[in-house]
Image 1 (cartoon, rainbow, N blue to C red):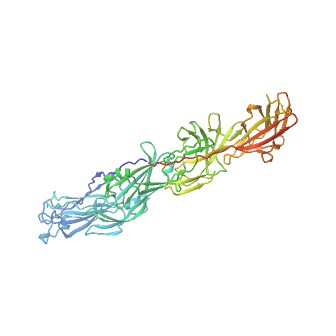
Image 2 (image 1 turned 135 degrees about the vertical axis):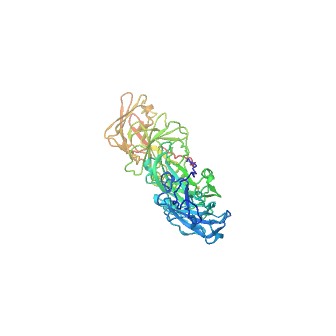
Image 3 (image 1 turned 90 degrees about the horizontal axis):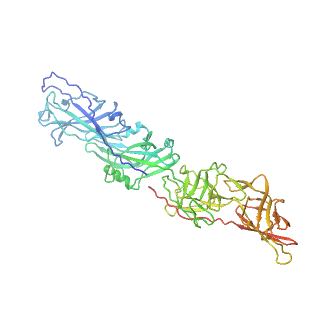
Length: 616
C-alpha cells in the first residue's frame, strides 16, 4: 500500500469592503468614523469554500469586537458587540464610536492608548452549534455529523474560527482610522482518503464504494479566543465522495472527505476507515507507523489538530488467488500472496502432506465458478516457475464474500507430471488428470480459529492458498501373458494382443470429473508383449462384444470376453473406472486359456505446506 503525506494550509487574503465614510473632510470629536473589518481565509478546501478559496456570498462571519483599554487585554465589557458580516458587509452600519462612551472620558475610545480588537470570530458554514455561543467568552459546542456524504452536509460541519487579535489603537484622523483584520481558519480536523483502483480493479468499481471513518470525536467545546478544544465521545462518519479522476500513473481514483472534532486519537494499529463495496470487496484501513510518521507534523500528543487535512492515498488490490497442487509422487509448493481484502474467514495456513518435488514448467488449466452447473471457460493457466505456481492471466477473488469452486485439468506426459490442456476431451492413450479442491483444515492468522473443508467444496475468499488434488481421469490396463512349464505350454515369442469393441474417446465433466464415452467403438491394438503395460483407456462399461484377443506367432488366436474376467474375489470386472489400474494375467495353454484380473488403485496423494500472507 502506498501512503502519501499531505498536510496543506495555504494562506490567501481577501479584502472585504467596509462601510463608506461620512463627514465634511474635517475631523471633529463628533464625527463618526466607519469601522473596516478585513476577514481573511487561511486554508484550502475542495468543497467547503467557493472557487478560488474565497468566502461564499451567503457565509455569515461572526466577529466579536471589544473596546480594549491596553495591549494587556484589559477591556471595557460594556463596549463590545457581536458583528455579523455577509458578503463583505456588516448587516448594519458599523462605526468606531459604536464602542465609545463620550460622556465618560475615562472609558472613552478616544482616550490615549485605547483601541479595538476582535476577541474571536466564527463562521458556521450553515451549521448550528450544539451548545449555543456564549458571546462574552467565545465558547460554543459543535458536534460531528455521522453522515457527511453530501457537499452541503460536509460544509455545514466545517466550523471556522478566529482567535483573539492584536489591538488596533484608535487614531482620530480621517485617513488613519485603522482596520481590524480577522483571520479565519479551520476549527475542525479534516480527513481525505483517496482510493486508487489497483490490481484487479477498474474505474467503475469505485462508483458504488463508500468510505466510513472510525473513532472520530463526537462533540467538542470550542474556545475561539485561545484556539482550545475539549473533545468527548466518538462516532463513525460516512465520507463525502468527490468526482472520479486518475492518478499521475493513469490509475482510476476517487477522493473521500470528512471533518471531525479535533483531538482524534491517531495510534498505530487503530482502525482508521472501512472502504465498503469496492467492486464487491470490503477493506479495512489501519493506521500504521509509516502513516503516523508521515502525518507527524500535524499530530500533537498522539491526536489530530485543528486546521490539518490528514490525507491518505490507498492503492486497493484484489487478493490474487494462489494455488497449490498435489499428485502422486509430487510435492505442492506454498506461495505467499499480498492482499488487502477484509475476509470474514481468512485462511492463512493449510494442513497438507508433501510428496516428491515438482519441476519447472509443470502447468494446468483452471476453472473457477460459483455454480457447478455452469463452470464456464478456463479462468487461467497456472505454471510452476521453480518456487510457486504463477497464473496467466492473474486471477483475483472478486469480492470478500462469495465462495467459489475450483476445478483443473492437465495431462501427464513423459516429460511433465502436469501439462495444461485446453479442452475437456478424453482419448485413448492420453493420461488426463482432473483436479479439485482438497479436503483440508484451514487456520486463521490467530493460529487457533480453524475451518474444515470437504474435498471439492466451494472455497471462501482467503489470503492463503487454494489446495488442489489431481487424480487420474482415465483407466490404466496392464496385460500379462503366461504359459505352463509342461507339454501344454505355448511359445509366447512374438505374441500380439489387441482389445476390441471399446470406446476410444469421450469427454470429462469439469464439475464432477466423470467421463462420458464417445459415440463409436473401435479396436485397440496392443502389439508386442513388451507394450502390454500401462494402457491408458477411456473409463467405460464393458459390453459383451468387448474382447481381449491373443494372437501367437504361429497364427493361433485366443479370444476372451473382458466382462467375464474376475477379480481376486471372483467377481466379474464389468466396468473400467477412473483412476483404477486393472491388471489382467492371461494363462495361455494348448488345451485351455485361464485368466484373472486384479484391480490396483492409482494412489492419489494429498499435498502439504504452509502459506503465509505478508501485508504491506
